[in-house]
Length: 258
Image 1 (tube, rainbow, N blue to C red):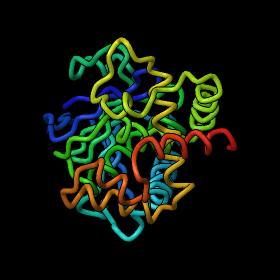
Image 2 (cartoon, rainbow, N blue to C red; image 1 turned 180 degrees about the vertical axis):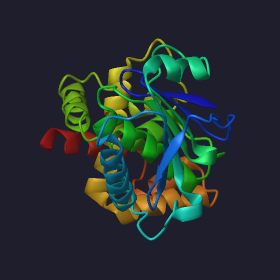
Image 3 (cartoon, rainbow, N blue to C red; image 1 turned 180 degrees about the horizontal axis):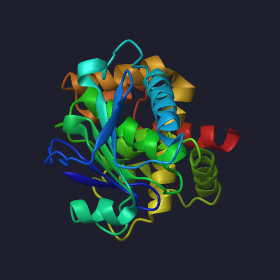
Image 4 (cartoon, rainbow, N blue to C red; image 1 turned 135 degrees about the horizontal axis):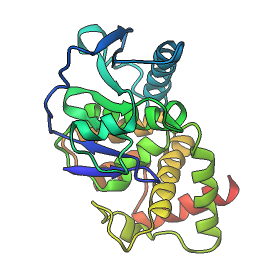
């Protein structure tokens, strides 16, 4: 299953698929507690900043989602980040699409990207890490509507989240948001859905659930999915909604006062 992620279609998420490892005698590596960064060339200070921010994001994401007690990537299980020298080499290596800025493979904890792209540290990196962390917890083979995966990932973006939240609030004010009955049926974006609307609203729903009801409720929701409960039943049970109409009204009220 391939999911296109990001408001500008900047990444792709591969769940349950393991591509060939990037193999080259030119790759060097730098390690930290939770990451191994593979690179060919990097500007002075870039790798240190990457390691610092990746470790910081790891801690903040597992804390935000309520997963703090679970240590996913320590030492032998570290995630891998492959950094190509530029966009041309990144896209040529696996014949990636021109819009692609990053590729994430959950099955082997791998993020592939390139040096020099805008928003890498503050948006792309935490977005892709959140994809892996969430899916490692709930399971790679669990079928979920797109808003859950993308909402979790987009909610962790540092540079874009405030803009997404404001955009979603305007959707509510103008009554142009996607009704939950429609949003919850989307498993792949089609041409009839505006990406900015979809990603902003999805992020705002996850923010709403965590801030309004707490990370323990989100952990309960995630644990139920992991244990085989259907996502709809898990959602209503963990956050104590009678139905999705009640949830939609609560989300709108939250957005209007945010």
